[in-house]
Picture (spheres, rainbow, N blue to C red):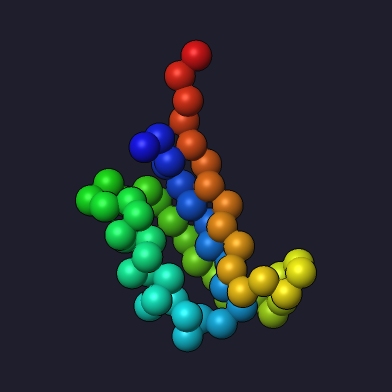
Amino acid sequence: DHTVKVMIYLTDMNNFAEFNEIYTEYFGKSLPARACVEVNRLPKDVKIEIEAVALCSD
């Protein structure tokens, strides 16, 4: 996995524990840097948005 940073937007921080469980299951022991913030609303009324930055080789 080449993911180096993840930005998470949640509409309700009460969902963080559930999200964190899935996140750590997905990335395993090599967790990328991350930040998580609560936002009032997301497009199309989704509850979560994830922005990821990954490195790729030429």
